[in-house]
Amino acid sequence: MLPIVALLTVLIILGIKLLRWRQKTFSYFKDIGIPGPKPNLIWGNLREYHEKDLFQAVNKWCKQYGDIFGFYNGDAPMLVVRDLEFLKYVFVKNFSNFTDRGVNMRTDEMHPIVGRGLIHVRGSERKSMRSCVTSGFTTLKLKLMMDHITQVGDVFIDVLGKIAD
Image 1 (cartoon, helix red, strand yellow):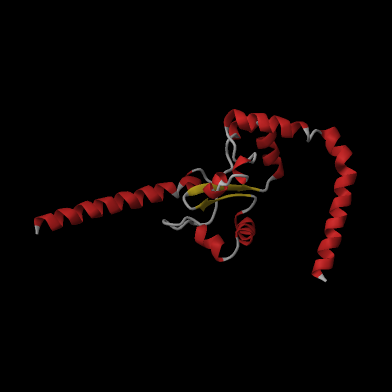
Image 2 (cartoon, one colour; image 1 turned 90 degrees about the vertical axis):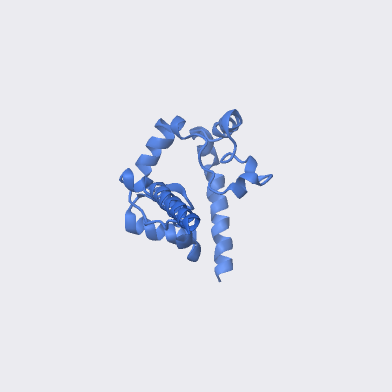
């Protein structure tokens, strides 16, 4: 009888520890004052956006929580920002604080082609790749490409119109 009581006690203590750890994991956004949907202690918000569609869920949350909110992809916190001024501040003035971030699906990282993309590479390889890409998107080069981008956009809209009919 005593071993059963000891085993039950250990299981209860482990269960309480696990519950508190999960609660701590899913209190990150709440602790720093960022609104968002309440996560499930097991799945985070995965079930909410898998039942519908990720984009529908995010649009619903944008309407409900505003331009900056957080949700959980499993137990990984994801921050959604639609405030353009804030994004400009982060990506231009504080970009060095946000390197090596962006992988949200480990399967993408393991893919032989997708895993080599700018979002997934790290460290010096990422820095080298980013410097190559950045040189192609200077203000002058973007202005020179604008006519071509407009033409391609028009063709794309025409194709979508034909498909919709």
